[in-house]
Amino acid sequence: MQKKLQSQLNAFIKKSKEEYLKCILQYIYSYDYSNTLRQYKVKEKYKIFSSEIHGRFAYETVVNDELKILTRTNFCYGSSSYFHIIVKYKDIELLPLSEWVKYYYAGYNSIMRYTRSYFCQRESWKYAMEFLESFVNRAIENPDEFVKNDVLLEVNGLMAGLEEIFLMTEMEFEKRLDVKHIDDDDIRYIGISSARHANDCERQNYKIKKTESAMIYKMEKISGALHFLNNLKSISTIIPEVESSIS
Image (cartoon, rainbow, N blue to C red; front, side, top):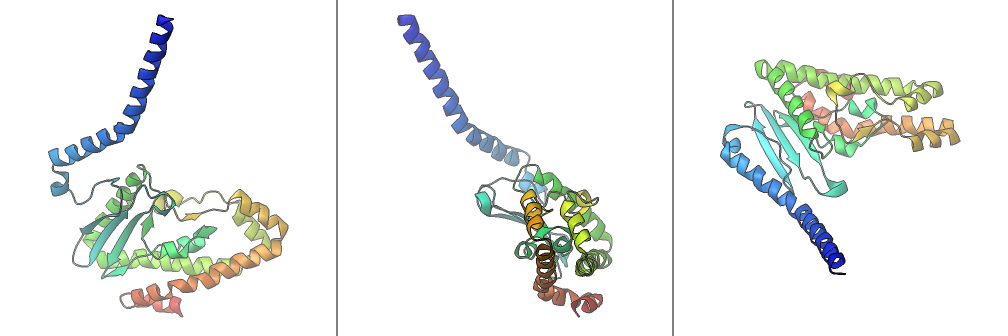
């Protein structure tokens, strides 16, 4: 009996320790993380670094007088969490306009809030840093020319996509529903959190009323693009070529 009780007590103690360790481990990691920041003077030496601090958190990186990059996160807020990179050129936010037509679903309210958006996961910092490194390095030499080319790539992508959607047949729409990956996903929009290709539920709904589904998709994409007009008007003040797209 005594051996049995001792065995049960040992099991209880072991389980209690494991549960306690599980609870405090995140605090140990946080303490080690903060210590590392101080030890290596990360905040003083680096423009930006990864962080999973709970609550709203933002870095501003000033590239030059006209180009600024803002990183905003609020990890651990469930479905309300966000991880955004906002690039401002002459105080105008650069938006991923082509995302609207490139993917079956993209939320325009989200698109109007960032240049890039990532899932709130530790791995996303890698995508964000790679985007920033590539963007900043290419923009430093000639920011006017680089930003102009980058913005026009988005605007022209939006316009070409809208025209393609407008002329799309039911057969072409059905092919779009089947798309699961686009070749340049990994180049420009890897890790994005607010756009996606069609899911199984949407493919099933399409089979119920094919003509209606295609028509609604066209209406949403073409009319929804009007939400970007104010941003396009702001851009046209520094890039006149955008005026024709507005018209």
